[in-house]
Amino acid sequence: MDKKKVLFICVHNSARSQMAQAFLNSFGGDWFTAESAGLKSGKINPVAADAMMEEGIDISENETNDVMDFYRQGRGYDYVITVCDGADKENCPVFPGGGKRMHWPFKDPSGLSGDYPNKLEKTRLIRENIKKRVSEFIKNERGNYGR
Image (cartoon, one colour):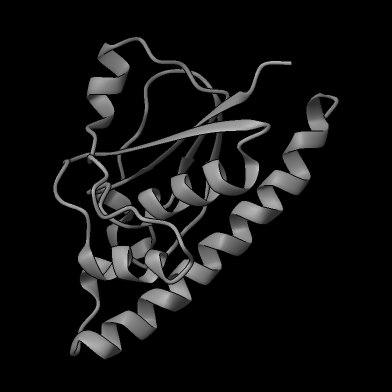
């Protein structure tokens, strides 16, 4: 059976959607293929990259993507998952293409205050929440198509 395609989207595609993409491809790569994009592409959040490196996953050199570029390219997805929280909900992009819609609100690491150790600790909590949600998604969704 073909892998299900998943698109994670958030505002900048610099942290939350990148972490979700990396975890899904790492843990669920036998069943899913994940990509991520944002409303405005930018640069990978270095604190998020450091937090993911602690998990053995390097996202530091990942490209950031514009969700509308994916739409113009005609990409299709089985699942489209937004990961914006209430603070940036009005700026959270949509993907005009098809796919089952889900919303997983996570705090944006780019909005964290404090020094580097404080930001890293808070980003670790966000990372762990994303990791847990991705693991639950794999468990719940892979059985929906006979795997």
